[in-house]
Image (cartoon, rainbow, N blue to C red; front, side, top):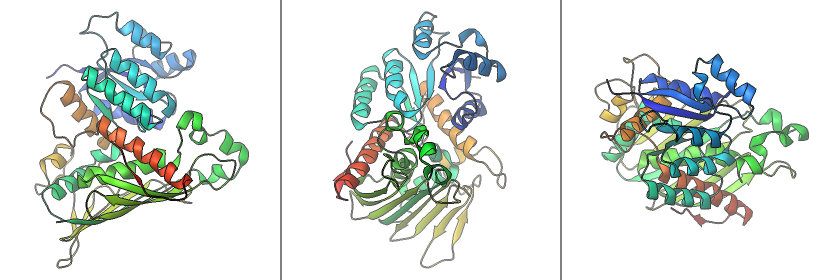
Amino acid sequence: MAKKIKLGIIGGGGDSLIGVLHRIASFINDNYEIVGAVFNPVWEDNINFAKQIGINTDRIYVDFDTLIEEELKLPKEERIQVCSVLTPNFLHFPMAKKLLENGFQVICEKPMTTTFSEAKILQSVLEEHNAVFAVTHTYTGYPMVRQMREMIKAGALGKIQKIDAQYYQGWLNPVIHEQEKRASTWRLNPEKAGISCCFGDIGVHAFNMIEFTTGMQIDAILADLNYLYEDNKMDIDGTALLRFNTNAKGVIRSSQIATGEENNLAIAIYGDKGGFRWEQENPNYLYVLSDEKPVQVYKPGHVYNSDLSLDGTKLPPGHPEGIFDAMANIYLGVARAIRGEAYNSGEFPTMMDGVRGMSFIEKAVESHQKGNVWLKIED
């Protein structure tokens, strides 16, 4: 068996959902071992959390800079090879940049940075150091999402005409209506989250899902965002109209005040030969639509699925897989890239996805501020 990849974790301690998700994903395919970390900026919490989850405390560091400094003192074969950056948004850029500059590979939570200009700087650093860099748009790891991608690539839908993506959550509804609560939520603080809450947190997933599945690039957007209260500086709801580099049109609908909604990411793609519909809350069902036939339902693990879909399926048909498995598929692709093995370009989102995502977020905010005008997405 191949030697396990030495993984470092930055952030994700305590009751962090993202922390649990990444740690479990790294274990699922037996490719990684966590050898070092800074789980929390408070030392007591940091070291106690490491003990709680059974991580050797010899390489639990007091802060990020110390992790870099001490790891570089170790022989290359012993030091951390790849670091997962799971901190709040404003720390992604400086941490990812320093990791790349010091020879580490990077797995970064989204949004990759807080500004497009930071994303372009990071892209230049990556090109200089030629590392593996993944952005964890988790939902690209679902087998039926990968099946959509491969079927569209093979021409199953013909010419794409219309795309409708939504991402609805309701978690901010109990927070947004009380001034004290909204003032103390980090995702509503531009200094920590960047210029966008809803589109920066979940709208960008819908953006990425569209480009990942269709292979088409969104050319321009027109956005109308909702802030609800004058003292709230961050969007919590919005809609963006889309133009593609073909004649196709589309829409992204995203909200974190959709009362009662949980994690309702869904996409519908319509071509001149047929359509696809997929919902994250029921991820094992890909609906195939046609003018001439009844609706078909594709499910994971069957021989009719593509190699990319089957590679991301761990259980026999009829055994539901979920978000841990989806993130694990991204970690599996990164492991192959780090080891120099062959891999499908759909196995993990790259820095280019992060760069385009940051352009989407900034252009959405700018479009709204300029009175809902069309703006081009940049690479």
